[in-house]
Picture (spheres, rainbow, N blue to C red):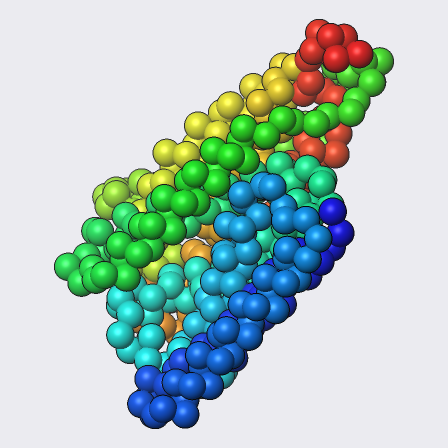
Length: 369
């Protein structure tokens, strides 16, 4: 299979820019000319993209078409984020006025940027892998974690936050997107894991003591305070009366008390999800042969990256009321702690993925050889 299909998806996704502009003009001008131009542009884009994607042989993987649509929507989300911050104008003005109020919160801004940049890149990489017949399971699992965290926090935050009574028809359209994405998650998980590691390398890695694995030792030392920090922030959003919790909220992260409730849901999900993960990961770094570590670190890294990006961005964004933003004198500490909390799990995931020998079972390799 050649690269024509992937090129067609890329062109198709970029065409969302003129389509958004034309349809926004159509709504505001209510003119026959705008309607005609928008219709013609859409038709031309569909014809060209279909010709590119199906020029020789159509991809057999159904996720190719799912990710093609998602790549288109990711560019739309990037346009939404840019227009919300007044960087561009006239592309989705009508949508922002008529959409559910959740999209105009600081958390909604961060979701738009994350989907328009990070998810868009992942969609293009997975589409390229499908086009060339390569495995995209690793990128897919990272996207699974990111999507699940985004969906859980967004849905629960909408339900319990201050906008919970303002759920409109677009929310149910979003549920359709989530249903298709959950199906895509199961498709990705069902793909076989490919690990090309020699049996001798596995046995040598598993004979090495922890003291001779400095990176793993560093990760183990990190996981203990990370677990404590995760539980601590969960207790903060549960209104723990401790002076430490109250002082931390007032001085470092007042956004945890924001009435939109996204931060509260985020911290509770992190405590219930990341907390057990840190304990399990401690076991996986100490005991050889835990093959599930490879998939688990990918999913968790994607989830934590999305969660921390949204939380850090919303804590500093001008859409957040001033009283809930991070105080200026506390921002260096806030950024340092949260960046460390974000980056180290990414490094752990990278090390597990590039040096998987310690986590593989020798018996499995013997059978495959």
